[in-house]
Amino acid sequence: MRRFYLQHERAILGAVGIIAFLILWEGFARGWWAELLQPLLGPQAARLQLRPIFISSPTRIARAAFDMIFVTGAIWKDFGWSGLEFTLGVALALAIGIPLGLAAGWYRRLSYAVEPFLTALNATPQVAFLPLLILWVGTGLACRVLIIVLLAVLPIAIGAVAAVRTVDARLIRVARSFSANDALLFRSIILPSSVPFLLAGARLAVGRGMIGIVVGEIYGSAAGIGAMMNQAGSRFETDKVFVGVLAIAVAGVGLVEGLRRIERRVEAWRPQVAA
Amino acid sequence: MTARPKLEAQDIRLSYLQPRTGTALAALDGVNLQIMEGEFVAIVGPSGCGKTTFLSVVDGLIAATAGRVLVDGEAVTRPGPDRAVVFQDASLLPWRTVLGNVRYGLECLGVAAREAGARAEKLVALVGLSGFEHHYPHELSGGMQQRVNLARALVVDPKILLMDEPFAALDAQTRELMQEELLRIWAAAKKTVLFITHQIDEALYLADRVVVFSGRPGKVKDSIAVDIERPRPIGVKRQARFHALEDRIWELIEEDVKTKAREDRHARA
Image (cartoon, each protein chain N blue to C red):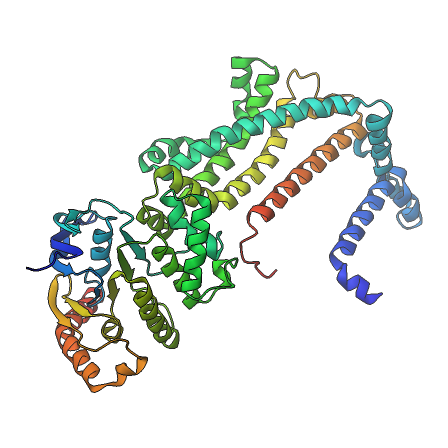
């Protein structure tokens, strides 16, 4: 018994934390804590019952999620739209960020020209560009994709610059000494040693892409997880808003885990660092 | 009639522009050197005398400010398959296995995959790493990493092997073992070798001829033939003749080493 606990300590304590939190939440919505503390606090205890319209509750959220997934199926359409925006946005961000970052890391002069933009863009909240994007391309799919690109491209490009900068100069000498041409040097030395940086950039990009989904769908979007949350919020359908939050969290965790799997496979050669 | 040297350095000069002060710093000041086919030549000199820089010029990684390097009478302008470097730090590709690292040079030269694999396996065996083909560099000891480094250079079948203090980072026992191994491999592979080291005994034990560099800017101070017959068991290092040569080279270097130490103290004060 004790052995079982020690072996799974992390999972057990994590589950206990989550369950305790859910019970606490449910109790506020159902007035359990108000009833329980009535003898102690008197009329003040009524304050511990919170209106579900504001905080919803785990059971309500579960019911709403069940409805949206299996009964009405409404969430799939939103998921599809957001997924499309996210895929296009992140793919574009990778297609721009990786070549740009690698080139800026390799060619010093290009980095001098590009770095001011990266630094400035990194220092501003990119969602500030949303009004401009709407002016330029309207509130359609293009706008939502572009805001995701804008958010996701930075960590990717910055990661790629750092990747090239930290390539072991001795390995470049080895390649040069064996008369490797630039293409081979890139393929055999720079790319393999860049992998951890590129994947770290991609991980950050996933999180920022999720922000892009929500923010981009605030204006004039009829479908998508962010739009659904926005509409549900304005109708005080708190349950649905939480379902949206959960959906994004699950998708984000899933994608990051996927990237971690890729990393583990590509980086299998790396010595295991003791935890 | 004298034979044409395999490798010839003619009055190699090299100076850097120091970005901070804007003045030129001379690293090599007219190096002349001739190495015959199959000869093992070691260069010794105080640290910072430009030995490694000279090796990079011979490899073609750095262009000399003046002078030229000839291999079989032809001028060297860039790295080529006739020369291969055994680097100071093993500088192995950490994401490749032993076999993958040894193949690397062949891949750079565009050798077909199947042939590259076969040649690499032969070299892995020659340097005594059979059974470790699929190990990653971090799983190897320093000495084993240098064996891979050596195999990687030998596999392209260069005419000239350029060795840049390959055993400097190894502990004393491993170093002696590797020196013996190198002589065995050299006897088997029959290469012309230019070996850089700061250790006089290493240079004497390995080489047919020891070239002494003077301190910065580097140039050839003297060239000493090592008339100790081969094969050389490690015990020759304890012979009186060996010690006599050691003393002679030390005398040549001593003044430069002391000057350098004085300059370093001065620079730090």
